[in-house]
Amino acid sequence: MTTIRRATADDAATLRALMRELAENQGHAAQVAVSVDRLADLLTRPDVGYLIAERDGKAIGYVSWLQRVSFWSGQDYLALDDLYVCSGERGAKVGEHLMRAISQLAEGRVIRWEVAEANVAAQRFYRRIGATLVSKKICRLVGDATV
Image (cartoon, rainbow, N blue to C red; front, side):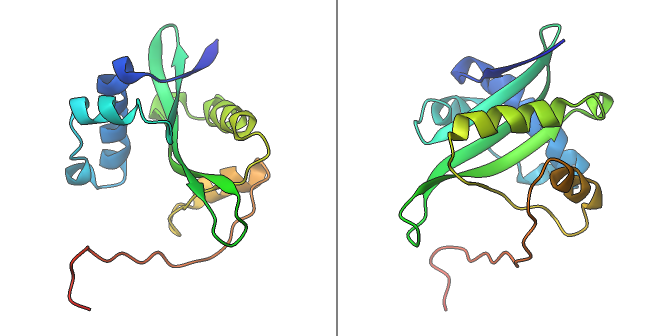
């Protein structure tokens, strides 16, 4: 049986390992620079949320988000950062359980996230659970860049 629970600072090492797995799967392992201590600090912030999925006491996935505000609507929303399910657990509805749990925590607020154009399987999953996919380009600018 899969259980979903709110992650705490004590889960930082486990979550970092799962984040690293996700990044390795996407070819971005070098970008995971957060330390376990820093992640533990982040997990205590009220605007940061993590849910962890476990089976038989072993972490098998997570969903993370930040609480944000939309200046257009004046409403808070949840900005989903990552949804990850370990490869051996995919197809067992773990992702659905995590998305259902964050949806309940959202209490009517909008949940927004990004998905890579090339990640067709994820797009198919998101459509299947009722998400609307909107095309946008993501722009990044490093602070203090000469513009």
